[in-house]
Image 1 (cartoon, rainbow, N blue to C red):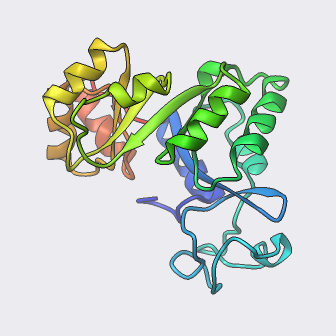
Image 2 (image 1 turned 90 degrees about the vertical axis):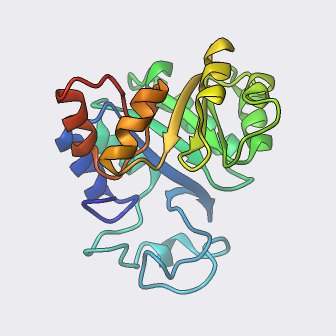
Length: 227
């Protein structure tokens, strides 16, 4: 989203141009459709107004999501990526687990194996529900803050990874997560000094709006990944 409107096909195309191994999208279930949209209101990223949930899909598709882009469906995002990168699906609503799990099941038939898809959320209840619906799906437990028991919360969810805020991540947490065989991804890491700091902490990857900055660090000899 540092180069194109967030959660749009234009931003996905730009990410693929940079050669990212994975993209992150925000998914909500509205009017029977899985749409890619971050906020619970329309004003910040579109020319619409009001609360997202309860809107008709037909109306949402008339909105300008930036530079003339439409609010895309998850199907359109996957078609655009076309197996060129993995996808981290962040669930943004309580009704998302079942339709997203069903969608992923359909994508497997089109060549999307389970190593290419990760489901994450700040709502650990919905992650638990996803795990019950399909234990093959990798889970990413999101957190802002530092729990007293470090990464134990993610272990109890049987998660694949923990996604931590840049403001709180520290070496103790990274080491604890790794001791539990969890991967550590940090959001949102956009400044070169923060990218280098995450490399020094030994995190497994970062969420960034500027993939080219992470690319430069990799070319300069740093080993950090991105997501």
